[in-house]
Length: 461
Image 1 (tube, rainbow, N blue to C red):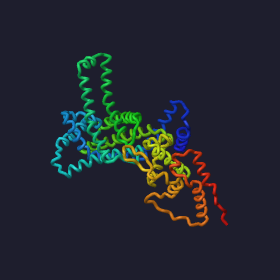
Image 2: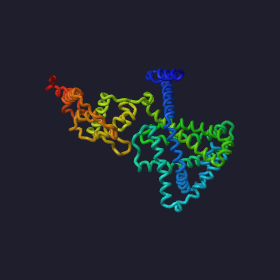
Image 3: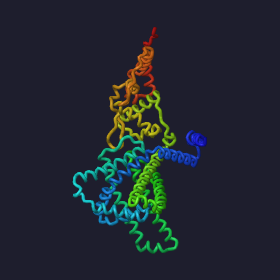
Image 4: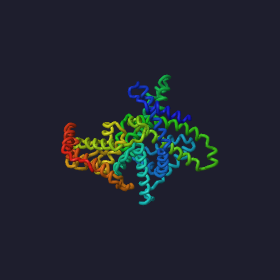
């Protein structure tokens, strides 16, 4: 009873009302509420949780190789001994004792790692774990962003290798710069000033939080295989940063009293808490990615992620419209449309429009380019392919690996189907896809009317 009332209230005041002409503050509240509802649905659905757990497993396998790579890079710059402090800081919510123990173990693993001893098989396994982590991270982000196409192996490798190599350098450079500035004689004198001193302490406390937000924003901007707006990435980064800070305080308080767990799990308690901590961090990362996605796509938030059904008429309209638009770009010798550009033109969710593009690609009517963000170009000669032929292909499309139903053999049904098909063929005869893309409306109407003029339809019986 209460749940039904809440659902009716949500439907009436959140989803069914049009707030586009309301004040800005009301539109912001409604949009935020809608986003939180969609985020709650994502979490209840369980897919984000499953992907976070999968990332925990892969992280455990690839953590030492990743640290070894970062350690080798830092060693080249002579700052390898500074790896201890940020690791201990990152693991601080686990408790001071557990953080120190894990940091010591991880540093020990990295220092004892000898590639020559591993051999070819061992080295290949380590490389595989790193690549697997890259693939799972990108796959999780692409799932959140409803992206069907992943990067190629070369693109994925170069993107993540850049993040792995540049990331540690930027973090340590920021820490070193901050430490250098704060240790200057001017800053030392200012820190003793009654008004400026507390303000400097407050600012110094915000520096780690700012670095966390910057790291999250970097992930959201560059990992999804699509163009992410800076504002959307920053919004996701800020939300994830606040969640991460809240989790750090909460988990630190929870982990401070673990005597009962130590009695039950003994030395395994530290490992268990570490895995829980990893899981919550990955989950926060994916939650922030969802926030960034919904921030960039308000049209999806407005639909409430309802399933979209293309009836035959609407399906034909979208298919022909997409062919006409891509065809005109082709003949005008302009850069082909990307999914992002088409989504903005049609003002519908990208994953919905992508389903129609995927249909045209599977039918061999359109093709995707391989350079960067996929773009769509004609895959058939538009000057010889007719509109009627395209509609016939779309209507008779049978997805791969699907069960084919037997045809209806009723003669009356067959006669009606043939009559409808013959009428459409006459109306559309001679209208090619090139004419659809380049001709004006009146010209197309005249072509259709000319096709119907010599009508030979005669009543049967």
